[in-house]
Structures are given as C-alpha cells and as structure tokens.
Image 1 (cartoon, rainbow, N blue to C red):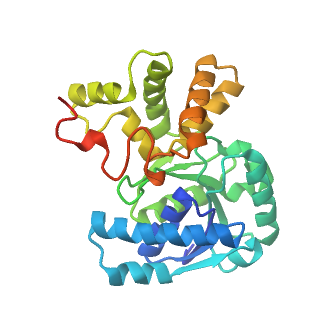
Image 2: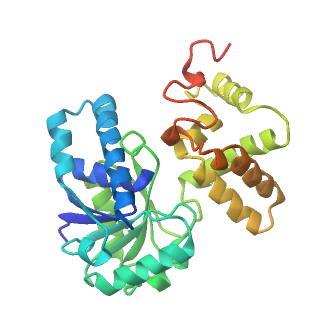
Length: 297
C-alpha cells in the first residue's frame, strides 16, 4: 500500500510535530483542527518548528519551506480526509472527544484508510468500537520533540490486520523514526511503562515534602551521569501529560496520584506553566537551570 498523503487530526504540540516531521520527509499533510483559531495557533507552532529543525538538524530554509508548503489546513473532517491513505489522530485525551472524532471520520473516510491514534493514556480496545473498520485501527505513539527523540511505538489490538500493523511500522521508518512494535495492548506502551514509575516516584517525593524538584534532578544527574533529571523530563513531555495520567489514576482510587494531580493543577496547569512549550514549568526556558555549569555543585 502506497502512502502519499496523510491527515493529522489535532494541531497541538504533538500533532504539529507529527505533521511537520512527515512533511519534511516528503509526505503531503492535511492538518485538521476544529476552527480557524486553532489553525492559526498551529501555523505559529510550525514557525517555531522551522527554527528548531534548523538549529537541531541543520536543515536549510529551502528544505524547511518546501516541507511547510506540503501542509494544507482544514477545519472540515470531510475535506481533510479526502485523498489520504493514513490518518494520525492527536486530539485531546478525552474519550468522548475521540469518540465523536472517529465516528465522524468513519463516515467520511475510504475503507482503505489506516487510522492511527497518538493517544498516550488510552489503549486501542478502548477506541476501536468507534471506528467503522477496527481491523484497520492501530496506535502510533510519539515522544515530544520527535525530531530528536525519534521513536514511534506501534501498538495493535487483537483484531488489527497484520498488514495494517506492518505498514504503520514501515511508515514510521519513512518519516525518520525508529519503530517500536508492541504486540499486545500495554497501557503506557514501552516508553511510559518504564518512564512513568520513575517520574511518579519523583513527583511523590515532592508532594510529600521529601525534597524539591531541583534537588531530585541534581541527585539523579550526579548519580547516573544523565543529562537531565525527572522534572526536566516532565517539562519536555509537557505538564498536561502527567496531570492527565495522575487524574486517571486518581479516578481509579490512587490517593498519591490524587495529591500529584492537585499539586500539578494548582502550581502549573492553572498558571499555564506547561513546560518547555509554554516557556516555564519546573524550569524556565529557553535557558533552564539544569543546563548551567554550576547546577551540579
């Protein structure tokens, strides 16, 4: 199956990165979002991404402008899904929003289109019932700053066709990612199954008054030689993600997660301190303290 054009639904932090990474690698990209305000915000993100790709990857203005010109913007699902072979969904992590999106998408998409969700917190079997052809549904999960942290986790459900799974893996390679095939449903995929307990332990220590974020990061960096600690990682991931994960765990009865969710909401979410993307989180950007020469002293 040849993939020439893709649709990226949701033009937030990850959606815009997925769209631009695909365009840089030669794909035509249809970016869909709910209204013109969201589209204008996306265009601003693409301007920032051009500068990041230039600084981090050494790409020229010519290459970056050619990539941007492969992107077309839509506020209509019906129009956006026309002439695409793959849809990557990156809409907000709320099941009712995803349900509404997939039901409308299914009404308008060709039966041959592959549907792939970038969901961080939901597994395929929670969404597949909203898709007209669940055998063509898979998850394709990216880490933030995908041009640098270039893994793509591909997770199937029991009914996913092998061809769909394999073709999604191939697409990940085609856009410069290292594919991580996941053969059984696993909340958190591979990366977050490893990373979330680590990040949760760090957050538990803060909310319980054991140590402050910078001290915890410093401890980890000195002890392991890592370039950053858990709170710097949280800033890169974006504070919304641990907040949503903590809320979900709290709803399932986890009292420590409830404390973390309340802490993140009061100190970060409500103040729009969302990490690197907003310029502030546990650190201030673009020059966070953990990169300073004397941070580890």
